[in-house]
Image (cartoon, rainbow, N blue to C red; front, side, top):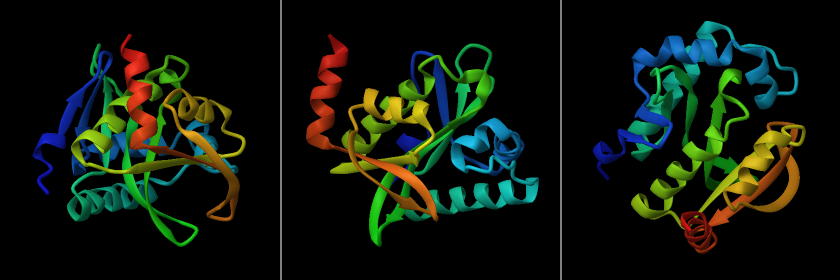
Amino acid sequence: MTSAPLDAFRTDRLSAERLRPEHLPDYVRLFADARVMATLSPDGKPLPAEESAKWLQRSLDHWDRHGYGYWAIRSAAGNQFAGRAGLKRAEVDGKPEVELAYALLPEFWGRGLATEISQAILNIAFAELGLAEVVCFTLTTNVASQRVMKKLGFQFERDGVHVNLPHVFYRLTTAGFAPHIASRDR
């Protein structure tokens, strides 16, 4: 599978480019923000720079192994780093899944940007990569992320535990996504 067509894309308000080692300062900034980390872990503790570097390296390795992964997200106006979003192989209850994941800096919250970039990523997942389904999960306390999932057409699957923390699990299938897109285009 060639990843060249997936290296970069745009939405109305955002641009996305495949993660590269040069994105380390952006990753450090994202994961050093306690508000961002509160959406990813209940203790909200920022990650030290060396841990962010490990996360970035895992993301780069994922691209090499699977031909897709996380993109660095920037605002179309001003080219400011907004966060990261993408598709990631994940093991959920011992079963391999493909997860949609996103994390934006707080100054980009509340504008529908997570939904916008995720919609584009789901188009890639289903139309370009031919995936049959995508999962999305978050902490039970992350109500904003749950709203994004619902807007995208994900269906609640269950409450559960992931990495020893309480999560809610959602799933979107190709069949569930196609009507969702059609309704948004009208």
